[in-house]
Image (cartoon, rainbow, N blue to C red):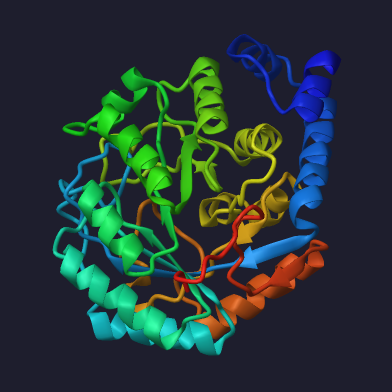
Length: 352
């Protein structure tokens, strides 16, 4: 274990077999040391900065039927909504007033939001806020769509790979293509987006081998952003009775991902804060460095329920930011409201 931890820190790599052995033999002492080393590695690239992104969840319609997700198309109990373009721009305006210079537009796979609509939206935001970065998280689209939105000014794209194991992926995503998922990620990188990938911890059927494959996939892809959170069962899905993931297991994956991909931007997810009041702070202390407060209107927040009992659905955007800032500062970190680009990113003259 000592040798493996040293290799992970010094060389930023382990084999699949070494990762599996490491996970199986982790003691509380090694976990503690793992978290400290991950935090030190993050500090080398980003100091003590925690980057804030304003999150706008603009539609909970979804064409997919993923077994774990409350937005799945078969969930007849879901109260569906779509924000208008005007409402989305109002959210961005409020976020900009609050100091955010990075926005994440997230939805289910809702093809009502066509290429034309999304270009109009991104263009409007870039015209009004040329100093802000825009991230899309709207699922699988065509290469032509991705290129058009990049040309319109979109800076980043989040698309969790969900599972590097083909068999695990296919067992959880009926009707979806494992190959297309990975191809989308590679296409996004090739186009020039700052790309985010990631996975959930504690999914039914997930093994140490699957987790090792996820970590090695991230190492190979080397995305600019890595999102890792716990699986939380939703009562309106086929996995409603499954045992969920834990904060502790997720912290281990965050720390290992930090050491394998040292320069990544890594969010402390809302799901962590939902399972543990101090879950987001723990994720920051284990190597995370991004938090995404919600800017969506209060009237729709509870409806964007990937899982249930999500925190912060009843807070005004200003209160949400103040609360998160105090918690981040209390944990010893520095709030960063800039664009918060990846440390290797060089802005080109034609990109806002």
